[in-house]
Amino acid sequence: MKKLGTILGIIAVVAVIGFRIYLKIKPRVAKDAFATAVLAINETDFNYDLTYAVSTDLKREITYENGTYTKNAPANYVEYVKKNKVPKIDEIITKVKGISYPDPAFKPIIIRSLDYLNATKKIYETDMVKLAEMKDKNATAEEIKKFQDEIKPKDNTILNQKREALYEVALPFADKNEIEYSKGFGGRIMMKF
Image (cartoon, rainbow, N blue to C red; front, side, top):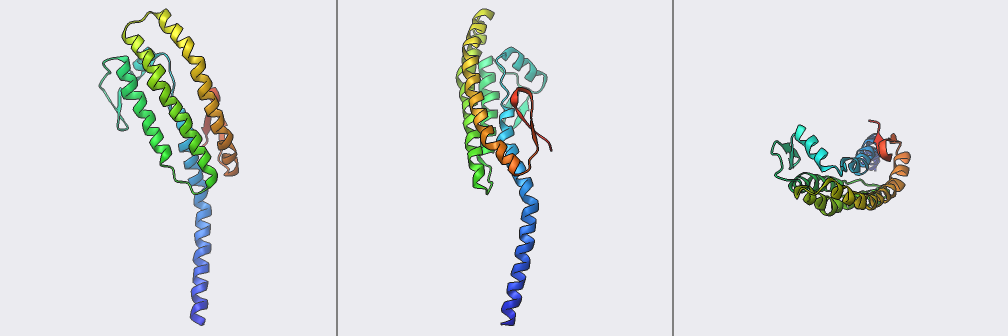
């Protein structure tokens, strides 16, 4: 009987220590999960001016594959969108899908983050590819502007709705878990690390 009491005492001490460790680790885990799911949408920079986007990437290193950029300039704008932008979004989607956070309240954040990211990917695979094709075929500036004027309002409306839906569940989670954030340019969430 004495041994049983000692064993139960040890178990209680280990449980208390484990719980204290969990309480210290939990805020960091919550912050990391929040950063991955919510800040991921900030990485999907949208630029309808492909000439600017390509020239900016050329100043850096250009072709994005397997998480790195190499100095292979794209042969054309369509290749640029398909080989640089879409794979980067796929990589971000994989990161968000890989989040394992034990709180069930976090699941809607992941779902809405993926919804935003998949909408972004769809826009790149459709509207941005069409725009790239126009650039490759040397469409006039007027034709390109007309097409951009058609797609921008629709695309922006979709993305703004999905961003706000994500923030609707993510910001209360951040407040509950004492994650410091602020709204930055374009309503984007910025975190204080």
